[in-house]
Length: 188
Image (cartoon, rainbow, N blue to C red; front, side, top):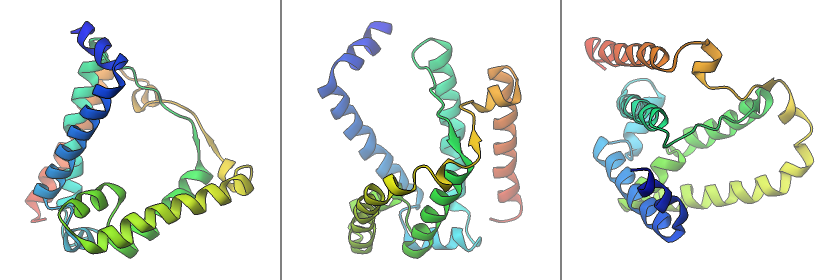
């Protein structure tokens, strides 16, 4: 199995093909889960429909176990990045503004474009490209200011809690599954 991953790691063409295939699969699953629908996303933002949260939490639950198994067998190593409170707050505000204004996030924009949604193509793709251009122009002027306020360490949740990896996973999985069950129980 190690030779397979090493071969994939060295073959950039295969990585592009696999990335494209997994991206298509991801978009398909987003669409089948209903989270590429503008109405579903807006209902999530209005806290009247929790489909988006259910799909994302389900993905986190599965992904957390998958990544832990890959890490356990030596096929993956997380690389947490440091951050700052300032960059998280500013980035969150920009993301939230765009998300609430258009009703899509970058992943759901791609999925919605794949289903033929013109609003996602024009507003989403054009908006993402405009945002990239603005960020590239503005970032050099603001990178030393508010974006650097409140440094955050580069640690995983497990390291932050100072718990064993599997214990951390069991606790987090139980909380997430419990939350999903609660949503079902109260009718969301």
